[in-house]
Structure formats: structure tokens, C-alpha cells
Amino acid sequence: MRKTYLITGGAGFIGTNLTERLVQDGHAVIIVDDLSNGKAERVPEGVPLYRLDICKTEPLTALMRGVDVVVHLAALPRVQFSIEHPVEAQRVNVDGTLSVLESARVAGVKRVVYAASSSAYGDHTEMPLKETFTPQPKSPYGLHKYYGEVMMKLWHDIHKLETVSLRFFNVYGPHLDPEGAYALVIGKFLKQRMEGKPMTITGDGLQTRDFTHVFDTVDAIVRATQNEKVGHGEVMNVGAGRNITVNEIARIIGGPVEYIAPRIEPKHTRADNTYINLMLGWQPTIRIEDGITELKKQFKLV
Ligand SMILES: NC(=O)c1ccc[n+]([C@@H]2O[C@H](COP(=O)([O-])OP(=O)(O)OC[C@H]3O[C@@H](n4cnc5c(N)ncnc54)[C@H](O)[C@@H]3O)[C@@H](O)[C@H]2O)c1
Image (cartoon, rainbow, N blue to C red; front, top):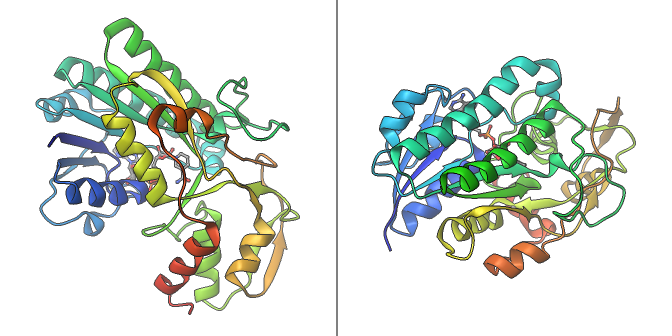
């Protein structure tokens, strides 16, 4: 059935991929993005883009009237940024999420699907990471994202607003932003290769990550917006279920490397996808080797 979606942060990396998919599926999409990191030119033609800070609750509420589903992706989503700029990061990630929930409630939106993060887990040593583990965020960003999940559950329990939180693991794929000091590792490596520079690996490169292709992530979001079984504040992992070292990523991309100072980051991440598979029938489909091969073409490295 055709639905009207409002996507916060819809001009960003995951947001533009989601918009393309929803438009393809025949849904109406409205985007709210302040373009602090998003790019207007990446928004598919014909999709209305409202340049607005999500913390501005009144205009946001007005835009949500008549909307069926909100997918809340807008955030300042970088660990290092949140350590260096904790006040601004918290304003957008926490106050912004509150503003989105309140706007959705007042406007009569049926469901809000929230971009949570594996960073809520922090530094657990036991793998794979299960939703039943106690969150122990190790950065302001991880804390903000966890706080958002708790708010999602509360707004369901108190106001009966349908909510779902999806804990994304490291997402990569088309539209990945390779710019800036906070770029995620795959985008950063591809850009360095394109410029003929060595790939800079933080620490010993033995840290592992669960890299998830954005098409798989988008598929999980779409299922979470439509499945009738969920909507009660569930928290679900969305990961490839496989972790590989940063050294291995550099090897798959190919080229010289340089080791630089380590960052504050968890040593390992790997998702247990049992719960989301059970609830939404979702499972990852794209192997990292294939995903990177496609991206290398896009970055003209093959
Ligand atoms: N990419 C990942 O690996 C990953 C992993 C876990 C969780 N997430 C979460 O997924 C979501 C999307 O991430 P992404 O990688 O697409 O990031 P992104 O930076 O590409 O997208 C975020 C978008 O939000 C917009 N935005 C920021 N502040 C805003 C504000 N105050 N008002 C309105 N818009 C604002 C930005 O302009 C940007 O377009 C984020 O919530 C992030 O925390 C991403």
C-alpha cells in the first residue's frame, strides 16, 4: 500500500539510498534535512526537501501532518565529533530526537523508525553482540544513540506511538561520504587511494568491524516501517553478522598503508541478527568483498 514517509536526514548517506528505494516502491517521500552534512543534489528529482533543523519542533510538526511513517536518520553521527563537540552533538542527537518524537505524536504519525547504533554496545568482548547485552557506550555519540532508543520505547509505552529502533553497524555503499576528518573508514580509504595517497590505518588495524551494505540496511528499514508484528519500541541489530579487520579492508581495496595514532573506539563489533531475522525475516545479502568491488568502480579505482 502506498504510504507517505518523512525522512529526517534524508539528504545524507543512508537517507538518499532509502529515498531512492521508497520512490522506486511507489511511496511518497518528504525530506527534512538542514544540509549540515547532506547534499541537496543527491536527493532524487521530485522529492520535496525542506531545509530545517529537526530541533525546530513547530515547523517539523506542521510537516508531519498527513505523514504515515517517519524514519529518523538526522544526527551528527561521528564518534570523534561527539568527543570534540559534545554540546552541539547532544543538541542534535538527543534534543533533536525528542523533537522528532513529539512532532510525530502531535501530528498523529503512525510509526517512527529510528536509526540507532551499534556504538551503544561500547566495548563488549563477547561476540556476537546481542540486543540483550547491557549497553555501555564509550562516547557521547554512543550515549546519545542509546538515549534515543530509550525515548522511542517510552513514547510507545506512554503515548502508543509505534516505534522501532534499528542498531546499524558500520554502513557502507553508494553515496558514502568520503570527505572530512570524520569520514568512515571505507570512504576515507577509497578517497586516499583516488588521490594516490596511502590509506591511514588508526592503531594496529587489528580492530574489527561488522560492515553492512547500505542496500541491506535500507531493506531492514523498509521492513521495520511495514511489518505489523513490530512497533512496540523494539531494538534490533542490523549487521552483516561478520567482522573483518581494518587491515583486511585496506587489503581488499589494495595499495600502500600508513599507521597513525589510535582513536577511542571499540576493539570489535559483530552483530547477532537472530532477533531481526525472527521479527522481520531480514538477513544481509551483500558480501563485503562484492560491496567494495562495486564501490571501487564508482571511485574509478578499477
Ligand atoms: N553510517 C553508519 O555507519 C551508521 C551506523 C550506525 C548508525 N547510523 C545512524 O544512521 C543515521 C544516518 O547516518 P548517515 O551515515 O546517513 O549520516 P549522514 O551524516 O550522511 O546523514 C545525516 C543527515 O542528517 C542531517 N542533519 C544533521 N543534523 C541535522 C539537524 N539538526 N536537522 C536536520 N538534519 C540534520 C545531515 O545534514 C545529514 O544529511 C544517523 O542517525 C546515524 O547515527 C549510521
